[in-house]
Length: 386
Image (tube, rainbow, N blue to C red):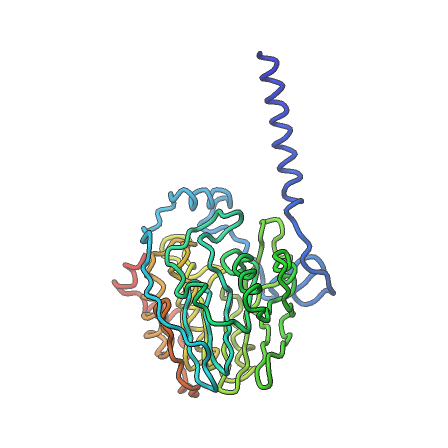
């Protein structure tokens, strides 16, 4: 019996060692092959403004330790509600001309209706954001039930993280509506796993939608992976949808980086609407931004640099991805916007169609340094935000 047990332990140890050796390589994928560029080394993509901040382990220690604390809830994070009720409203089938209606569906999923087009960003109707049904559970139900969606014409997919690229949702959309799906290099290979075609472009690449309307894939600051070992095998991006009445900017998922990428998007024309992430920025108490995610402070700076006349904060309050309290992003956004002396950047209720006013050139905006911003935000109300 003892010899049998020792034999089983030996085989078990060998199997575990082989798994650690073989499985990571098996989970790696080549999503894209192409020439070396300013952000592709022939194997993997990178941020030309540096990757040190996107690979740093939050809160110090080991990456395994961080995820263990996160998954077990032992990182001291404030409690979130288990369920957030959503009041869904009737959605128009189409919005003609330069009128524009926007409905936040949840996280980075937004329905934009204008010029007779229905445009959807990073669609995810999954209950969990992660592989094999494992990952953060949806707290707020989708602002629009999938079956209540109008026919979708255009889908923008920013990168391949599970809370942004949901194969099941893309497959349902494709089977029902056959929309044009635009993404960045390499993500088309991931989307193809669901039998769904898409159009992939490098930063600066364009896709014509109809006369007077096109999509430009633009730079931001992030990373991607489906299985850890396939890190940065595909490219991440933001998007500018160029429209006659002023452009729509969708930031995707992004950290601050050099904060020059909003300037590049602005150069493509006046921004009528900016969809900018404001959540999942805090991985330790008091943190105001992370390398991978802008917080409200940097989101306000992105909004200023874009010269946008209207901004909506997204990427918060749907999946618990980080440390901050459920309602910290909108509260901190309001405080930061006031300190910056800006207007027009706010959050909207889930499932409620919002009319976007016509583009109006913003008044001259004073540049507020980060040091001045932090001094302005040093209040009891902001310090109380967890």
